[in-house]
Image (tube, rainbow, N blue to C red; front, side, top):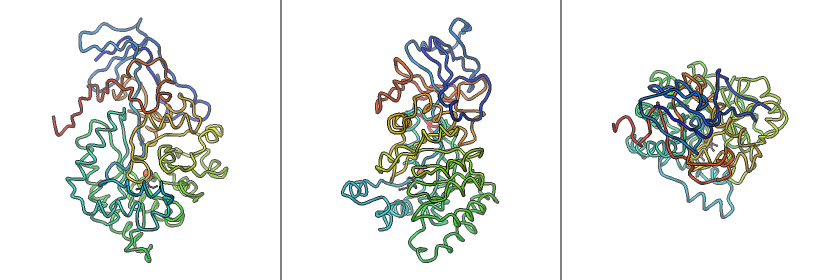
Length: 416
Ligand code: NIG
Ligand code: FE
């Protein structure tokens, strides 16, 4: 496939970068009046129109339109049952997220629903969400368990993720989040639940190869630093790298314990101090911000400017889940990053592409327009500039989604 007359081809790379950080986040390399040549499922060539090769195959004239690498959404919970708009109304009336959780709502509410939902039903619900986010331009995604909270239901969730992987046109990374909340049966026996995670869930997950990463909700009212450390170390023994929820509700020590265990990413970060930023410097860990969660819960936004000024890289992800972020719209996340966290459009797009790919270990194949990378890209509607993407928040600016070198028509592999 050849795409010609592209107004701007965004996020091009000659050589693969692992991630972009600090002041480099403001640089978004792009080519005006460009072509993009795709062969099979890969990017074969790109450049200025004056160098465009002649080509007999399928050709798209993208005049007035821009081409971007697909978004890399490195933090989601798209496998869940039902919805929680009742709690949304409770929050409007004054309850906090923590108060709802303390009353047995929140994650435990979703767990109850999920335990009573069949694997097939869950799969269908998650598949619809996957199609939805692909239409918003997502071309690689991470999905977590964590609404099972029993051996059986955590495995059920992870098997649903495995089935999604089999039919998905975009790569999916699976994360085990058994430590999302302590189930009520273990309220007075937290150690018992942690033993269950370590002794029963993890070995079975490893045996069936159901996850790449291990997550813990390390925060006030959820899991402590000591508990997190123990679970992450157990996960590492089975080859699951840490990728954790940290510092959403308090300066929980989550960032520190994540970095100490070489976490691939620490996510949320609405509560950050100078100590947390210091610990992240020179680490391998990607600080990942989820501004649509802060928006939906009306909590503080992560201090993006402070982190970038310190020289850190940052990634952006949706956190799509039924409690804190019932939305999987990456373009809205990018708008919020600009509007609420004062990131420039270039910084936000870097955070949502190459740095998101890093947080899923996919930079070799995703996150930029580079020869040999996967042809997961989208063509916008006619737009005047890159900044128009975050500026026109809530609008749908994507005209064509291309995955593995083919136009996405909304069909999964099991429907073809
Ligand atoms: O990332 N913070 C923890 N977990 C999810 C929300 C879970 C829920 O409320 O269902 C999050 O925001
Ligand atoms: Fe989350």
